Length: 295
Image (cartoon, rainbow, N blue to C red):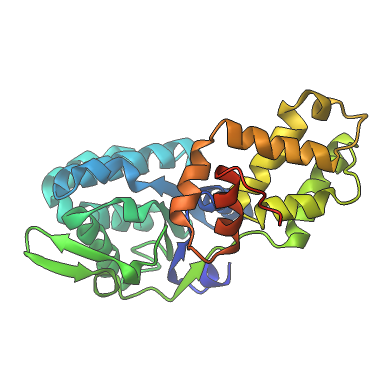
């Protein structure tokens, strides 16, 4: 919140399945509920297949932006101008022009949350970064006061091949206005305990002594694993759905085995995306190999 209040542009990055999108959507709801900002979330992955075709990419991004503004803010402004702006300004200026006009017309400062930014490639990615950089100097009256770029990697680590320039452009040079790069981590032990306590508060179902320690040993706080394990044991398993029965360590271990047997897609993704020496990988990889991850 401090960075937004300071009218900063910044980067939020983390591996997949950590909860970035859920966080951004919750942040959008919170900011809009304060009554101080107009905040909109947009997922630009819709433009991934455009690759080097900037006009096609911006058409997809602006179409998604107008849908989100209409659905979440009940604001038809972008819907009314985006096609005309795209036609007259072209893909390399359309996003900047739409945001400029929208900021000027809005009765509250705009905050833009851009998700999956590193799903874009080539000249489309370069164009969006440069348009945001160009508009930065026009804030707060004629451009969003704060923009969050969210993805798997830090923008400064991007090495983007431009077909038009026949060169490698670094993300740090295309978007050199960011105030800070924030990396989302997993849950700590206390956060895992608080999350599971919410289930007890809502259902009165208890967890036996040692259960939360077993959850930690199975997940090491990886958000997807923490939630998947809790959902499996409390909502999928027959015994777990009986709220008069406590959740036991054996039930947690059975739930872990069920996730492995089903070979959940996210488990494979997590193995490929977590560093070799990270605690999460040391847990996930043995799970998939049928080994004891708690030893």
